[in-house]
Structure formats: C-alpha cells, structure tokens
Image 1 (tube, rainbow, N blue to C red):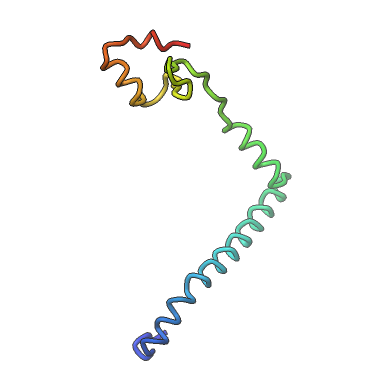
Image 2 (image 1 turned 90 degrees about the vertical axis):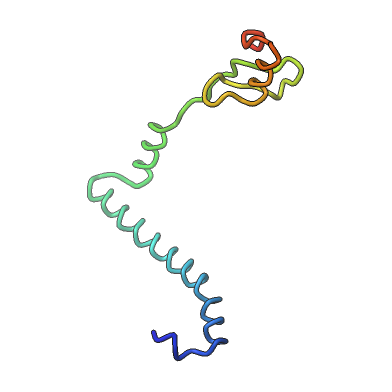
Length: 103
C-alpha cells in the first residue's frame, strides 16, 4: 500500500481503523492456533481440557502462613519470605526485635 498517495484525512481514518482490525485479526489467530493445539492433543489421545487441567495442578502453589504480625495493626502481616516490608524495617530501626512480631 502506497501511503504517500493518501490525504491527511485518509491517513487519520486509517490510523483509527487499524487498532480494531488488529484486535479482530488477533482473535482470529487465537482461534486458529487453539484449533491446531486441539487437533494435536487429540492426535496424541488427549483433550485440551485434560492437558490444561494437569498443567494447572502441577503449577499450583499453596499459600504460606503468616509468620510475623504488627502488634498494633493486624492488617500488617508478613510470611517471612521475600523482601522485608517497610513496617518491619521501621520496627527494627526503632530498636525492636523481629522475634517480638512472631505469630
């Protein structure tokens, strides 16, 4: 398509229509890929639902219990994993011991 032959108004109109067309084509591509995956799964003796169910079961993680809780604000809790929350850092900076927050 030679864009240099289009007027400014035609270019603006084209620019407005492009996102909708891209969404439509993306949906179309997803349907095609899903059908291909379903066909491959069926060729191997599975349904797509069985494959997704097994994947979900193996990747599911359990929640971790809270290990530390702020004594004045019960909404402030921490499992002891990951980055130390600011309220815990402040608690320790004030000279308090982490053990005092144990649940």
